[in-house]
Length: 200
Image 1 (cartoon, rainbow, N blue to C red):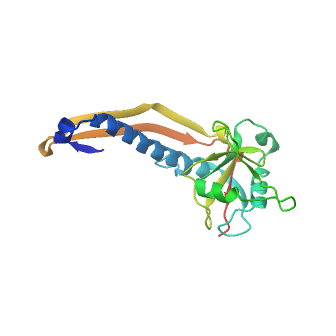
Image 2 (cartoon, rainbow, N blue to C red):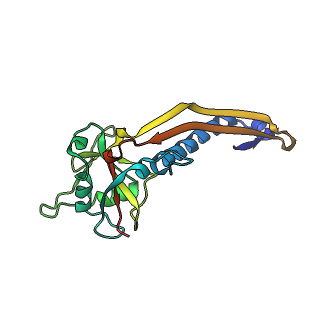
Image 3 (cartoon, one colour):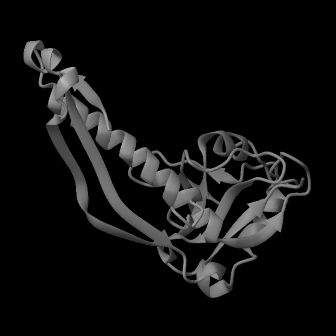
């Protein structure tokens, strides 16, 4: 619930309400992404990482190896790997480490970057999606998921609702904005998405 002085709203040379709406929309977007990724499932959505099942444990602490990723991919059923929308999800830091992985025999990189911004990069033949809400690689963390990502269902009720009240903090000379979004998510078929658990 951001508050802005009435003087600023009156004297500003820009549309403060529009700026607040844009920034609130960005903040809500990041918060929703975090909830849909790692939400607890109680007062938050059941995040895709939280709902996923274990697909393997890394051989080393705080490190993801090529064999770990292969094990994770093949921990899913063969029919899942054939579904459109099957791929990887990790944050940028993990993605940077994974890009350096090479095949032990040929020395070729496992990661295949694309030159087209509209086409996802690929890892072991599957698309890779970057998500800043995913955990870093650390002891006992779930830093990488693999599976049929469309199996995670999101329920969005309406859109972002932004309300303004000039009465709520009238005695302080403040305009109050309330921004909210109703959303929920869950993964009914937990075997469709697996996570890689870092060794503790």
